[in-house]
Amino acid sequence: MLLRSNEGGDLLVWSANLARKLGIDPETALRGGNSKFERRFRRLEALLAVASVDRLLLISGTGDVIEPDDEILAIGSGGPYALAAARAMVRHAPDMDARSIVEQSLLIASEICIYTNDTLTIIELDASSST
Image (cartoon, rainbow, N blue to C red; front, side):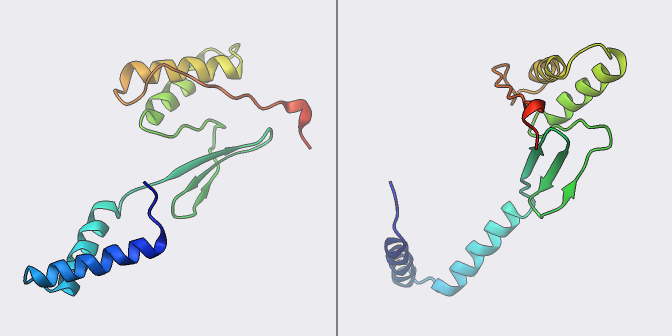
């Protein structure tokens, strides 16, 4: 269901009227709801991995831009597991190509993390089309 902006306003007015009818101060209820929302979502973190043929960056929800030291980056619930597996492969299997390292590290992460599955979509950047 799509809620249009004017309907959202109607919903807020209706909620305030209902609160008054129930003997609740609408302003106090709204402030309490906002406080609860902020407490729950204050630590919500968003991460974005950005890659080009020459560069790999991590952008945080607060706007921080981070460049990894070892040219390996992983995000998401299984990110730490995939990162550890990829680092181990880069260090101990130098003959593996990038795609194989990505694939194997994601599969290892899926075996460890209950929120990560083994259905993979891997997108490769074409170095020959670099500008």
